[in-house]
Amino acid sequence: MTLDKFRPYVSRFLDPFVKGFDRVGMTPNGVSVVAFAMAILAAVAFALGGLEDPVWYAVAAALVFLNGWLDIVDGALAREQEVASAGGDLLDHVLDRYADIVVIAGLAAGVEDYLLGFAAVTGVVMTSYLGTQAQAVGLDRVYGGLVGRADRLAIIGIVGFLAYPITGPIVGGVTLVGLLLVFLAVVGHLTALQRFYYSWKALE
Image (cartoon, rainbow, N blue to C red; front, side, top):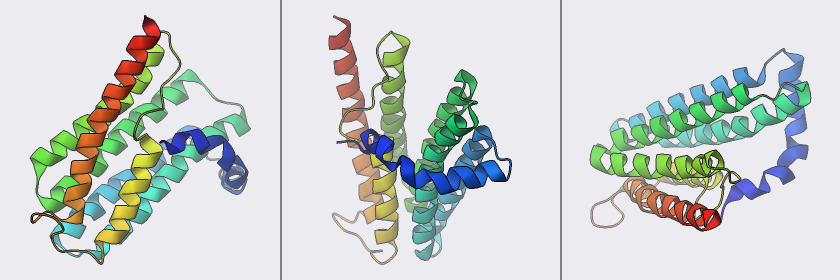
């Protein structure tokens, strides 16, 4: 299960955004930076959703979806402008990892459970690391496993919208956002192990 494999099928929906950014002189790197800014704002909104007013969860969810959409647009814009480069790819991946970290930090801050946040963020980072490390040892970049980045953003966004009306404990005193962090921690590490196993077998 991973939504990343459907990226080629959304290309026709990207054209208005790509042409719009190109028309105003936006570069792919600029779009990547804007996407990262959306992730920072989402993290702040998630923290406010837990500490102040749950309506912020819905705001955070919208910003997460915007981050994910812009993460697709930047690559399409690079191809449109014929400026795709290793440097741009590096910047995109670095900002994606920081975006993952800050969003999960915001989720953890909102429920004030930093140990669970640590477990979740390490699972997410290791998943991404194993995907690119396979490429570093001569294999193709690995996107497979239980949950890829696109799946993760979709799940975080959906839970964010649901957390607005569903504010109370769900299981054992744990809120919906707390359960999301548990999910990210468990599935993140399992996905990382899946990718490690795949890469290990491919190298034999």
